[in-house]
Image (tube, rainbow, N blue to C red; front, side, top):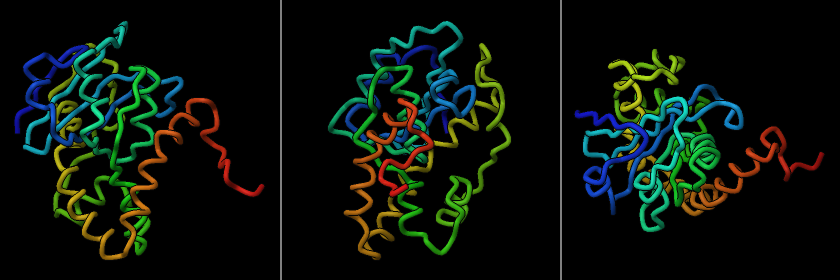
Length: 208
């Protein structure tokens, strides 16, 4: 595994290597409230064992034209685990909707109804026999320089999403839920926008 660590944007040579391929995406922020907590890192992988980390330090302007071009390419699918948070915080700070998308957590909840464990660590263990550490999850992502441990953690969140999608797609097809999953993925950008507008705790489709 090679981790490429960038500040504020993807360099042109990295963009050229990543373009045209479905790309795994994750984010790290100062917290889990996307209207309050600053976006600090966007991590990317095309499933080749390498990861690119784009680190936004305090005071960044989030211009990032190369990163935005990659994430808004309508011909490539962006793979997430819990896309709802990631696409919302990127909309908030980068001003883009990083879609079309696939969410491994959503797929898991649709097809792995025999369990309530749908976290990334659980999926990797159950479907790929892969164990990852979550020790750095609540570390200070706003630091000026990410530690080696933070970089390894951030990379681990995107390195396996392509393989997870393959496993989940087989299960979705087996249970005749592929089209339903796609409908959920298509709805997630609207759900993220509702979150940013303050409807994050409200189910607009509920009767009450």
